[in-house]
Image (cartoon, rainbow, N blue to C red; front, side, top):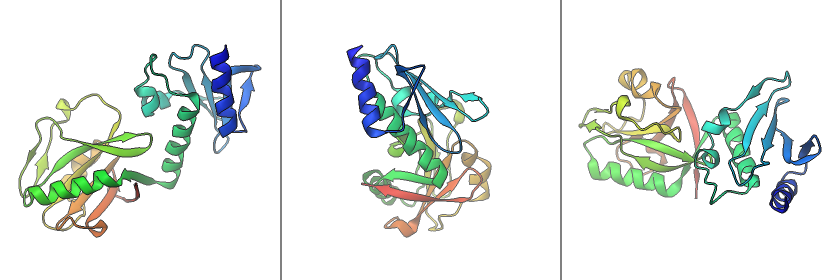
Length: 221
């Protein structure tokens, strides 16, 4: 019970609007946005907590369990503080509201260096999101690239929901999606980066949603 009290106090310090459900410190609710609240049940902590979104009409959504890095990689022997889960949820929701994608600076610099190294051949990869930030480039199994195109095979991709985006280069220098991009790779993930030659600055980088609409992106140090 002492562990549960400590977890509750950490959440309360960071989010003063936290409420107790049925007076239980291990069953909490936090208001989010648009009359949506977050419920977290951690009675069996350090086992993985249950995280539920509750709408004003009473409808519930448990999909965060497959979207948040903290929950997808939960380890009972190395449990994260409950407050870290709440913080990740707020980052996730803020990103969705702002329609902005966050990417690690070192990673983006590394991808641009790879593009320069491989030019005039295209590069193609998947992007992993952890705690709301793109942190890793993954080479798809069996990917094929040339100086005019790049393809990979969805059936060979790992079942990993943290791989939310893709990135590929345009040796032509035009970082705008082609019809082939829109009809193929763009349909597979939530967001997509295109880097155009000479791959030496942010003017060469654009990000798009699956419909080809440009998204804002923010670099995180």
